[in-house]
Image (tube, rainbow over the protein chains, first blue to last red):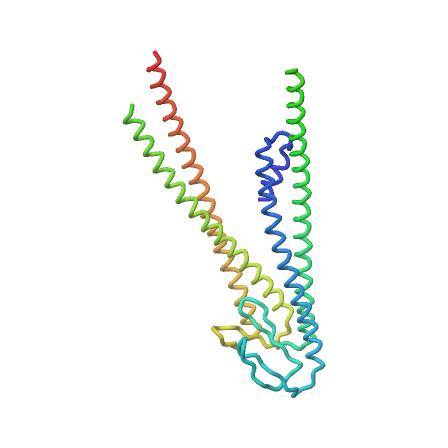
Length: 160
Length: 131
């Protein structure tokens, strides 16, 4: 797909008709919107992992046998006691869970955060590239509008 | 002439319907391929994490609301097998996509030829009227 787009860029923009330019512009606008949505999903995920890290640190410092309330459903909390503040269960994905201590849990969050941030950066680059391309399209479209105006003006002058 | 025209038109209609079916099929293939890519990514991530674990680590697998204890060895093998399976399915879908693309090209070419034939017949008839 990106190869196709490269080929589209390789065709000099001034060879395309205004309708084609508008079409491509619409397409790129839609793509940028979708990519921006993905970008905000990244932000949310990163925020969640950051929060998890903070919670893990606090959990570490919470003494054993602290009273707490356990959510069974969204509206039902049950009193309980903190038995093992040191161990946490981590969801690794594809149905696998691993029991780790809070420090290993924080390292896990760090690794995930790194992955997320790398992907988010790649995404930002792609979005910027597309926006730059849109700017070029807009400049080209403006040129066409000016050209048409100039031709109309000349025709007016000739009629006089 | 009218008979020829009708025959061609109905053939063109049939081929166009076939083409639409092929396009719908292609849509499904592409969706399936996308899902496989996602699953492959997720399993790769799990594999990398499992590789970081020490042998005594307590691993559990979620089997329908029950966390069942697994050995690290079992889990690693399981994830590897899944990745292999996904790889094979991926190749299958890619082959299907290639086949479908070729079929679509063939259909489009045949539709185009028939449309040209139709055009020529109509042209010839109109010219014979003008004489």
